[in-house]
Image (tube, rainbow, N blue to C red; front, side, top):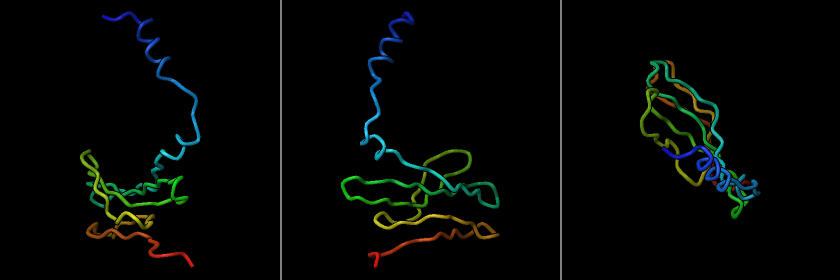
Length: 101
């Protein structure tokens, strides 16, 4: 068994101040929607690219009980606000495609 002081030293050594680049690596998850049958959850994930100077959102889906997440929208365009149809067979979302004018 390791002494707790040794474990505390390891935790302290890994800590550092947050830098601006760290904030751009964060992914924001929101707008979760459980399917009518309770089997799946659709949600939006937003990322920010400092190099490209843009934000991108995508819609993802995961089984409610856990398992691998599946991206439901294409990378390179933004999509958000997932909504299930009343019967749970379809998923709709708002999307932005192409260049902004």
